[in-house]
Image (cartoon, rainbow, N blue to C red; front, side, top):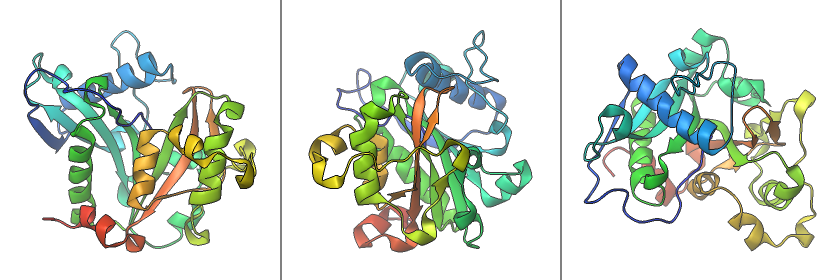
Length: 268
């Protein structure tokens, strides 16, 4: 789920975008996704990683071959495939996680409560939009495609890490604290940051929080999942290599209300 979410803005290009969503099926499509990730996570946010290819401008890791890569393509945008891929979601099913040996988030969170539940899981990650498309319809188009993916595969629980930019926990304390106070996952879904890197989120007592200001500083992508009915796990993970502070979001489709669940029903 990592990545900046929508923001206020004007139309991305002259004229209306011509959106298409599909899973990457070729090396060229995967490379276009990795180039967008490089532009956002490396150039914009200052992240890194052992397999980042700066010469080719590719943000990549060992998990990429096992994930499905959902692409948002604007066919009206000039410049070929690299320019037209304006949004990316990375999706890992139970079966693929068994093949790779773990979920990506397991490096940061103890996922035992989810993996031991017997329910159909889907991990989301590396979510990002080209800056020109934040604040428009692009994210909703991607979420609609994600809903189709979830419905087709009978997914019951979605989860993944989502990020605050930066590693200054003191600066993030109000937002982390309000997430812990108001949006902590139920016990059965409450994944926990790994003990060796556990960063408490309950840093400021709720009575001392300016909740409105604290939520205003929460990245839009995280707020979007909370609005859909998602929760956060216990504890944050400070990722110095990626220059982020991560929380783990969990969305149980069985707990969604009628309005929320429409997103995950085909045809609505």
